[in-house]
Structures are given as C-alpha cells and as structure tokens.
Image (cartoon, rainbow, N blue to C red; front, side):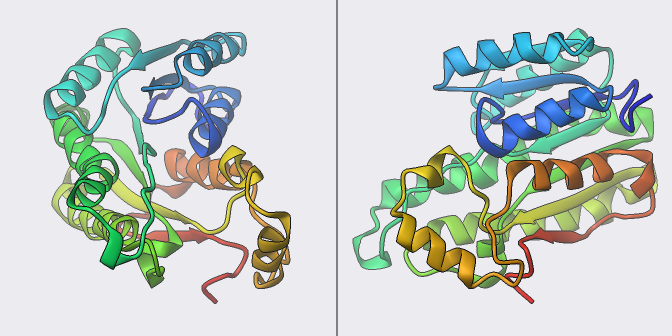
Amino acid sequence: MGLLSGKNALITGASKGIGRAIALRFAEEGANVAFTYLSSVEQGEALEKELAAKGIKAKGFRSDASDFSAAEQLINDTVSELGSLDILVNNAGITQDNLLMRMTEEMWDKVINVNLKSCFNTVKASTRTLMKQKTGSIINITSVVGVKGNAGQANYAASKAGIIGFTKSVALELGSRGIRSNAVAPGFIETEMTASLDEKVVQSWRDGIPLKRGGDPKDVAALCVFLGSDMSTYITGQVLNVDGGMLT
C-alpha cells in the first residue's frame, strides 16, 4: 500500500521535468493520475502509458490551464474519468526572462497568465468538488525566486510570489471545509532545461548551495507526496522550500 493509495490526483504541466517526476512518484505511491501537457504531445502520450504500466488509472489531457474555460472542462473531465479529485498540483509554468528595461508587455502577460492565472483557474474550477467531499489537498508549485526575487526575472518572480499569496488565501478560505492549500518552492533543480546551460555557470550555482548540489525533480516530488498524503493533514497555508538550504 502506497502513501497515496486510492487517491485521485491532477497535475498540470507534467510531460517533463518536475511535473513528470511528481506524476511518476504519485503513481508509484498508488494514486490514480490525470495530468496535462500542451506542446510536448509525444512526451505526454508516452507518460500516460508509463503511468498506466504501474497499475493505476492514468489519463493525459492536452489542455491549457491558463485558459479559464479549458480549466473548467479539465476539472470536469478529471472527475468523470477518475471519480473524484483528492490532490490538485499546479505545476504548469514558463519563463520569459529579460531585464525589465527590455521586457515586453507580451512577455509579462504570458508569464503571469501561464504561471499565476492557471492556479486561479484550476482551484476555482475544483472548489465545488472539493467542498462537497470536505477534503482535498491543493499543492501549488512556486519558486525560491518568488520569495527572494531575481534580476532578469521580474515577471517570473511576480507570478511565483503571487502564487504564495494566493495559496495562503485559499488555505484561509477553505480550511473550514477540510481542504488544505500549500506551496512548494523549489530552488535550483537540475532538469532538461538546465542541462543545456554552461557547466561552469551551473557549477558555480551548486557551489553557492549549502548542500553543494543541485536538486533532483524527485526531491520536489517527495515533498508533494507528503503534502498529498494523510501524513500532512494538519499542514496548510505553508510555503515549503526544496532548495538545499539556498535561502537559509
């Protein structure tokens, strides 16, 4: 019996990186997993097969969580596919980095929409289902950048800081209904995206972290399992860093 045995989860943006690691770990812990992907169609279809092979119900949806009506449809489809929704993980996110002087309005709007508005869309759409059940765990993936800021990422930092305020507000609003809302703030996590960066630069980042290494997507997934499980039933409204001590 896994820690999430019998629970039904939805993870946005799960075709690669952190989202994929969360989906796989959830399936290993016995959860049925619905997930979204957008541009990475082949990876999304492959993940559905990989999850189903673990003996759980798995369903991938090609869906844009930053679209309000698409998010409503996604929640309805997930509940009809899995029977209920116990864990919602908002992981979908993008970066469009630039110094503020060079940042376009489009770069700002796109990052806010994909990273922050998508959280509003999916949580709002799932609230009725969760309130009827009187139970549920909402896990929003933010970033250490949302806590401390970062030059060249004003749009990303604003979106991730917004997620923190949103997460705490949801915890206050829905706590009396047995619904928990927490944020996970990854630090420097080594994924496909970071593999293409200059190795010397990456090593300098590792050297600045107390644990002297970058994180693995599995490190983030492990915390999400804890927050989705019954081990964390008295934890809500929190921001938990997975950063090797970066913000210490």
